[in-house]
Image (tube, rainbow, N blue to C red; front, side, top):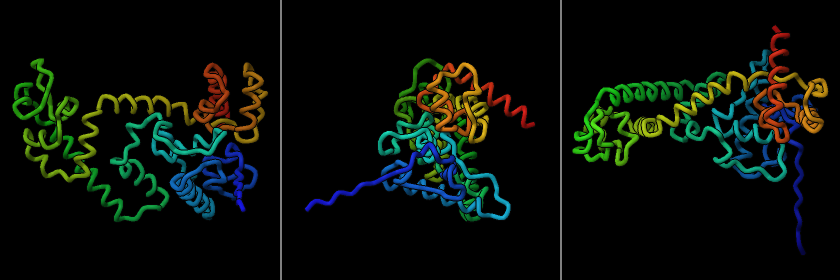
Length: 287
């Protein structure tokens, strides 16, 4: 005999960014019921739902713990789910706009202090982070302190651009053949940099130009992305110039921020100006 197993799920657009349901306050959901599939996806949602449920249960609840798309893949996944799904959701790196910032080598740098803000990290972990941060600062200073000509870098085994321009050890990482071991020949004190910090520095220096672009994009987008939209429930029929289909979508999804609204399927880029005006007007009214 055959056994058929059927799984059901809620409409994830009815969740808040904390993974609390909009219809039943205090109920937090995680995993397959939210429209995702995979153990890692479920575990990540469980972590965020559990943290936020714990925070909300305190006598004086602090702000919810929400990670942005530029902070963690967890933030990308939850933001995607809140936009709605038509098939079981898996977290692929290609879904993230800021992949150069969301690296495994800098996960502790990105998230440890965020977790410490809500008491989810012990003092020992914070001490480890401080040591690594200090090591990174020392490594960056050393990489910027040494500058050689193309011929000098060539003699060390690099393949620099032979244009006569002197380049620092930091800059040479963007050239073919550059490795940590070879750069250490030009700057011997780098040999004392711990391995995990050396990995971060090598990646940052190699992709510095592209990382800087993404950092600027994040800063520019943050200025307006985090503008809050009207609280649920809000009738978007009140917003002039929105198409009827957009009004229906926004009334159903009730995005919490302008950034969430901008990523809602069916909302035209040209309509974001009207939503921006709405968000700024609401912000001014709340002052």
